[in-house]
Image (cartoon, rainbow, N blue to C red; front, side):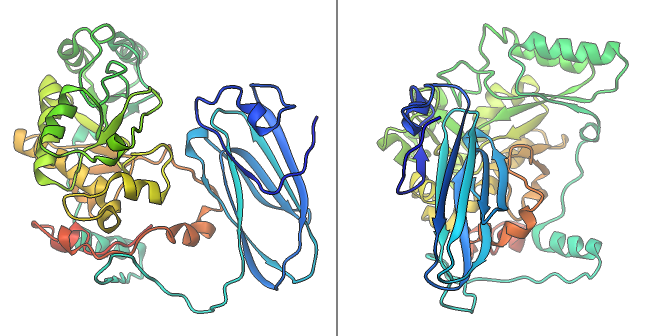
Length: 429
């Protein structure tokens, strides 16, 4: 055990930091799980509603005068805000305690706090909006509320029949044989199964965005997919990212047309594989066509049935904050990132939906996305929730998290038959 006095709590270590525990405190063991406790006092200068804002990963508990106000655990790569709203009295000395259990790499912990507002009114503002449209959908029954939302944003197409069956997924099958063995076990055990999912990294390490299978682990992609279809009578969903490692054929094809976001390249940003990367501009209709053509050539043409559109926020920076993303995807074909940022998953899904419908008009589309936007259900997509931080008290905290989302009128997206369904206004959720 070791102790010291600190002026602030502000720890942010990169994924590859050597002996990261020593950077938190030199008396700690260099690596491995650790526990850290901070104890102190706060004395507010004025009475009112305060907000404690920890930004963290791993396990955190916060007490104020022995009352537990934060108690959560977050994955290492998903550090984010939490909050505790407390009413404090001027001149009263409150005991503050934080316990942090670090059991992963890339430890992050910062403690911020917000003083009482001088204003009692609520106001909404935007850096870039020309106007804000509000929609109120009255039920009062929930079904009628959903029906009103469908009228505004578009009805979801019928999913393929097989999509209603049993799905099998895991954090990737490393070889084509692994997934076939799993299907074989389902069949031999007489467990009905309709779909199996191939998660990321079926490509070679420096070829993110190539959509090409690693020939050592997937020596016959077309034959593998035929076996899934014909031998095991199942369907295949595959993970596709709008991300491209520098130097891949698809990267060069998109880059030559100006279809990639440049800031990551000029800033020299590399991912955890140590390769530089960026994302394509899904707001450019020609870029969307090229993105689909690359998927069609390497994946759909081999028989892939469904799409897992991962990292569609887009994840241009590791665990990105709002400012990071606005910088990294700026400009877009429709203007600044601030103006259209949250609609990226909608436009990315459209590239796949419209592309597949044109290539195979008699085949139904199924898309799973990691992020979503108003109107995206009309593109036959499901929304992935398994990798988002979810808390039982999340609903009570939702309003403050919405504060970071920009209320923007997207008149530039009002095109096509969906009209207002193409997200005439950003209503954050």
